Image 1 (tube, helix red, strand yellow):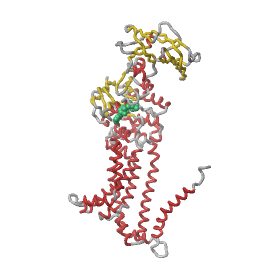
Image 2: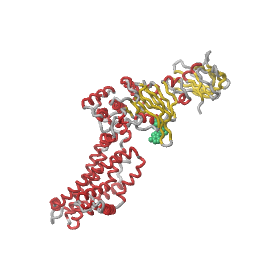
Image 3: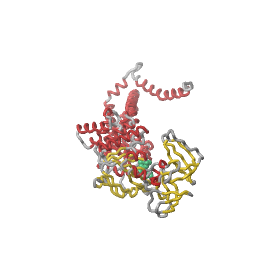
Image 4: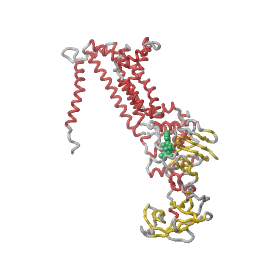
Length: 264
Length: 352
Ligand SMILES: Nc1ncnc2c1ncn2[C@@H]1O[C@H](COP(=O)(O)OP(=O)(O)OP(=O)(O)O)[C@@H](O)[C@H]1O
Ligand SMILES: [Mg+2]
């Protein structure tokens, strides 16, 4: 049987790619376990976990990520919904706008933010709270490409227009259509957008360092300058976090797809 | 008693006029079909009644109340869509109860009503299923129950059966009519399937290019189509270009053969056609009928009937005979005489 033949080239490339990704990671992991001479130990991890700055950074970033996700959802779900319903011809423009954060380097974006909002009349960087507002706004923009696309894909799998009309003819106003019909059917899409946004915010360095807020990534960067083993341990921790997010995403979307696709 | 009234409805999308001068009065409990070819404006008209589109001009009233600018969620009009449009995240029971939940009815009342509706569509045992666990026909029945659960003043259906296969379509067609009769609900049914329209409706509105061609009972539409369009669109018809010899008693000629038309309006000199349905024509000659002769061109089996195509004075004509076992079919190339009653044919103005 022809289909059963082993494609050695395919295997070769898979192995090569796997090595390319896994070797450095293995190196980091191995290194992070060798803080104590001649033995394998979790010493570096102990130090990281014992450092209050780590926990503060973790806590701060998590909180910011959650706020970012809530703001993004409130902002993008109605926007994309409206686009599908009323201005489908605006899609190309939306695509371009939402891709901008990928095109414009974050550093440029951050300088723009600081120049605009740290001066009168805004002066947002004077207080921690207003700086956090600014940082969340920045995170919302940075994670916009992910959030928009996730919701867009979810919306595409629904017959948004007919579902809306069906709900309206049954007496729902716009808000009720959104809350009872659209959002529940976008559950998977919103969750996957949220998880990617979460990972993005947790790893975001530039915004937080230039706005001088105690986020996780600047702490990692700082540690990297002064220590050897601890940053390796931190890198592994953040990998684990990201992979945990992705795994969660996988589980969630598997649980939902069969229903979404056939339930149309 | 007029329940729904559309007067002088016009709808334009930009420069394109899609519905024009649409006037219709629908009685309480009546079943009306909008019938017409694709793109003639059936859906657009229905959507204006539902409130999803605003008419460019004209008014829509229900029981004398002007609803022209009322938003769809305030109209209390039930709608069934071609694509079912059940909410995928809700069970059958929640779908059916949705409209009642929105209007903040009590839990007990919702449950009672859902139960009643599911009994009506004979799907009680499916209450806890999700839409994706149902067949197309079942989904559409649930959609019907959902639309009816809110006790709408009006039920609108936009080609509800066209996504289903033939057998289910027939079954559900009867079911829709049964439920409609049982509830006595005023219904507007959009279709491009003439058989559906003829078999379901109290009256049919035949549309073409955004205008009403004719409004009438199925019998009127089929037996006395007012225009060439209606005659051609509904059923199969023979239209033969004839010359009027005597406008007072309807004597006409087709080539060298002379005939009489049973019905004819005022003949104003415009070109006319003789209309006759294939099933009215028989083989052979008979006194006191219109008798013609021509050459057999085709013989087509259609199951219960056989359609025979002839050429008479250079014009095609088809006739249907029942496929009885005693039937002796003519052969292609033979010349045959045919006849049809005078009162089974009529004159229609030629449209341009
Ligand atoms: N939103 C719109 N914008 C512009 N033109 C439209 C719009 N909706 C419908 N039309 C046009 O109006 C005409 C009538 O459309 P409509 O959907 O009412 O036809 P229909 O009779 O329901 O046809 P079908 O049997 O194919 O469903 C079509 O030519 C269509 O292109
Ligand atoms: Mg249509």
